[in-house]
Length: 145
Length: 145
Image 1: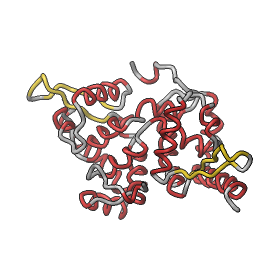
Image 2: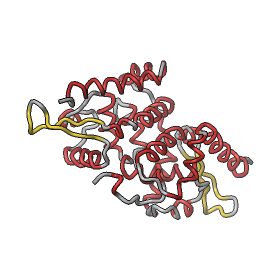
Image 3: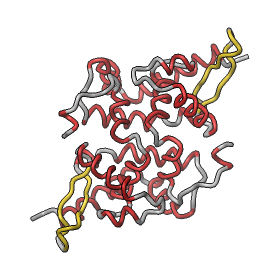
Image 4: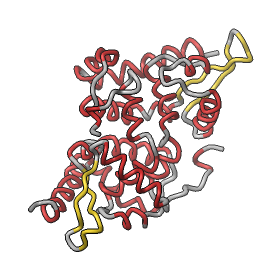
């Protein structure tokens, strides 16, 4: 069921947004799709947060129902799937950037994230453009028929 | 324990941010503090999402531990408390604005939120300034000794 077909549970847009993405695991999958070039079930499983298989499956389904991700059969093996951010999903990027900026300011910075933050700090607009460009390059290789 | 004293669980800043705020109820309390002038336990309970008392208590504690909110005894009744956003908490505003913008674009708009969105759309920077100004006016009345 697409979001537009559902009735909002709350009169507040924040609440309705949080019904969809107000969950740690959901946004970690979105992060993997945006910043780590991950598109497969087993790739999400290998992230450092060790998501459980049942949670991963339920969150991928939730993201697909909400129209945030799409899926196609893997070209090399039809039993596998490739997941990708839809236009609605890509529109989450500014929110994730603000989340990262808050984290950078208020949480102890970890070495592994330093290069990413150096890039965001230098030119946040260019960073957003590069993320979207990389996603489009992947789509051109994988989604065009 | 303040955030800065904890060891991050993940090498990724997104994950560490989501450990703190990646929860629907947590962000609904933050929303109430920012946009609805709520500062008391019973006021959070009266929000349309009907948060349960045990969840509200645990999330207020989590937000205080993370340094996002502070609390003082209520001037009229010492057994009650007044909660407020700290500077670290106020820094979450740009993320909430991006969340609202995404919701406005992709979720069915509800009438009750229309006036708020008209203001955000007309001038998002002025809207942010007004929210912070309102919070500071409340602080001046309630936190100054």
